[in-house]
Image (tube, rainbow, N blue to C red; front, top):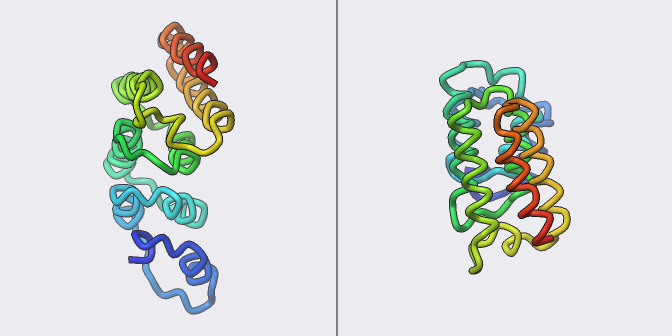
Length: 158
């Protein structure tokens, strides 16, 4: 409930307090991500990253993060990119190509759906996206040309 309502300070206080009795599971983290509470996901990841081990749940987390770039109301870019970079090693080739396609589509969008228009700081958003796609290139060398094209499009707009 705190995650969906974005009560970050309260959630942080509860997690770091001595009387925190909630049993954290991977499904809790997945539920937060599925509810588009990526800022809360970052908070939970920083506290409980060692507990996220189940490959099936990790696959769902990566898929949810990649799909979040396709959504037209895609805010919280910094939090999404942070989480995506933390789970980048678990990403499959199909997910990587889908991520690149989603970023390219959202950057090429000439309406209010452009991923850079939604953010307040276009330069910072571009740098974060370039960092993400460069990490994709390091993990999947054969996507080098596609990453280069997306990166040039990002730089051209910024």
